[in-house]
Amino acid sequence: MTQAAGKVELNSSRLRKELRLLDLIGMQILNIVGLFWVGTAGKLGPSHVMYWVPAALLFYVPSGIVVASLVKEMPLEGGLYQWAKLRFSPCMGFLVAMNIWLYNLLVVCKIGVVVADNGAYALGPAASWLSSSKLAIISIGIVTMAGLMFLAWRGLALGKWINNIGGGAVVFLFLAMIVVALPRWLHGGSAIPSGAAPIAFALPALSLFNLNILGKMGFGAFSGFDGVGVFAGECRSSDVAGSIRRSVWTAAPIIFVMFVAGTASVLTYSAPDSIDLVAPMTQVLNSGAPRLVVFSAMLLIFTLLAGGALSFSLMVRLPMVAGWDHLLPAWFSRLDPRHRTPVGSILFAGALGLAFSILANVGTGNQEAFQLLDNIGGILYALTYLVMFGIPLIAFREKPSWGVRWAAVSGFLMTLLYVLLSVVPIVEVANRWLFTVKIVAIVAGLQGAGAAYYWRASRAHERVRKCA
Image 1 (cartoon, one colour):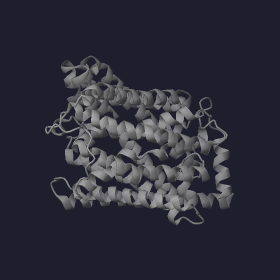
Image 2 (cartoon, helix red, strand yellow):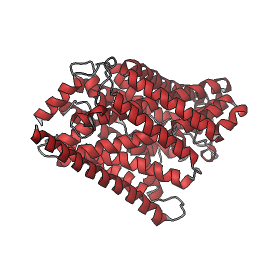
Image 3 (cartoon, one colour):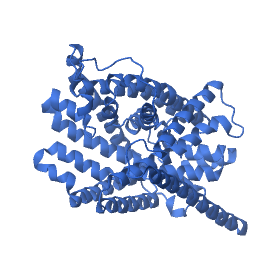
Image 4 (cartoon, one colour):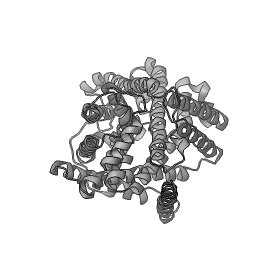
């Protein structure tokens, strides 16, 4: 393990050291905060806080504890890939990297559609055709993907500023929404039909639906602390682990308050059944401060693009580190001589992402198919968290404190709840069993294909090593 970690550190020494503590905090906010979760949570009414609190206690805080513990032991470029490789097996590490890569690929592929939708909202009725024009969406997707590739090629010297501004824009949007809603909230104003306050500390009934919401508000809304670990080899600090841990605990309370106060602000102006799930923040500003709507919508588009840039940068580093272990062709790890970024990985991810986004928009746009892909992407990411939480519990020679162990148990169970409720639909679909079978078959098939590829790649490398 020591030899393998030393090899990673040697390869990381060729990368530019660009990230400071402030950059890491901006990344945490941008990577975790989903701008639409306040709308989803608002559908629960004033009891939303009784979902946010247990989601934070049972998943958010435990994930922060486990990530902080693992990054202290292994502050290595590649993050969770390295943790799984060194504590379980190289094959497990490869599957983790593959799943994170595929999840981020699905995120990046949706950028064109999301930008077109929000652009239509920002530019007004005259631009409403943007959201339904396949040519416009594909064109926006091509331009967006080219921009993401350019930023990834330039590296974090430029990308960190995009991330910081994007993280700051997220905080600004939430603060603007809260400031607009606060006077009405304090004077007893509420859009809830009963006139109740936008926050109520009443325990919801225990049901499958409520457990589903809890799972999605736990893993769905609060996952992402692991992302910064991927860039560990590009941090300036001599104490990389300490910087990443401080970024976790600095960002955590800010993000939690943003979610709770943001949801209450939505309910101040919108009844649960009238919340716009696509643009809940713009809906609030449109009601309370119409002059800010266009500006906030454009700022929202920028934050989406910044989040896409961060996802793309994270994605291209995983093939790079897998290439260091000779699991992928050497050109995945080849660095640009000037910017020290993995050019081969960037070109591969950009080409595949562009092809996927075009194919998706050429299709009929079946909602069940979209939901299927969305669930599969979430499950792929959740599987990596099951591995992460499993490290303190069962990994060889791992001796964490009891606090870390309990955090890992809580995080593992919450993630497992998310996976199970994503596999078994509780909403109406054409065929419930077929929906489940499709998800299980695709996810299992991807894991089998990944394991088969790893076996062939590792055998090929072993033959080359013996011949040498």
